[in-house]
Image 1 (cartoon, rainbow, N blue to C red):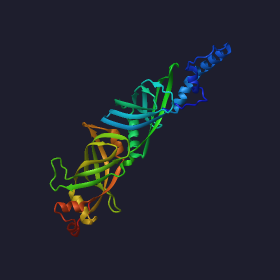
Image 2: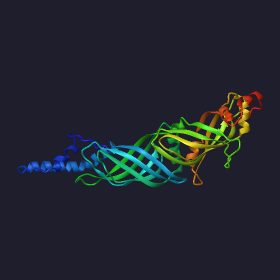
Image 3: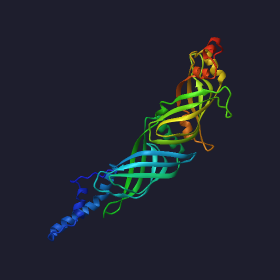
Image 4: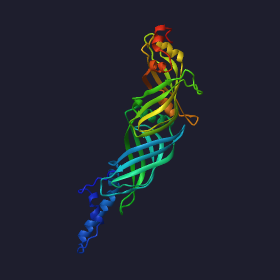
Length: 338
């Protein structure tokens, strides 16, 4: 937090009040003046403390959400607190509410006691109960959809500085962080077609790339998607299968994770034979479920179900790798999948 020092302000007189220098015995008038100045400072100290608290800064450098449950999660959060002032107060540990900016609190955490040096590190490492599922869902929608997300951190704590009386201050901060921006850049970077399905039913396996420009690490469990051929002027969108990202953990930066899909190969081959004769198949991927340790995480699912990724798969090359000639399929024609 930024305890700005103003040498012309009352706070700037702290050194004068608390210093002890050898000097001639002051007159009664000087002693009265010093007493009055000290009294004014003590009276003003709570207001000065709150003013400086209001100017403080909080930056979240890492936020890891793990062990997610329908009504709880584990939080490991690293934050940096800046304080350019020469005065370094101490703050007691306190409970703080977390909420999407302007919204209802979705959880409460304990902020550990802090010595506000020039650059102090604050670490929160605890299990957190979700107190408002709707509010937490709104937070996740913002975190996954928006380029930036703002979180309000609010609470009350006691402040200690030198010999001044302990004072209670309100802690109210709005922290701005990067969001995941609708998973922009999502893409299937490689895949293979399996003419004979594997034991779990997967007949297409590969890797998917998911960029994460935020400081968030999200454990989302097993995430499933619905795959569709996009709608055309004459046909509606056509489901062609499902895909699964097993034990998905999105970390900051670039994520490349395995993807396993169960695809209706008859529909895909029909689409290649009649509409996408160059073998390049457009596919819409829509989020469906998020399941961790057998339990649905609705606060992720609602967000994923509102996200659609548009990709193009080189089905022609994948078919060629298993001995199927896409151009020959195109020459045969066939019925358009519906």
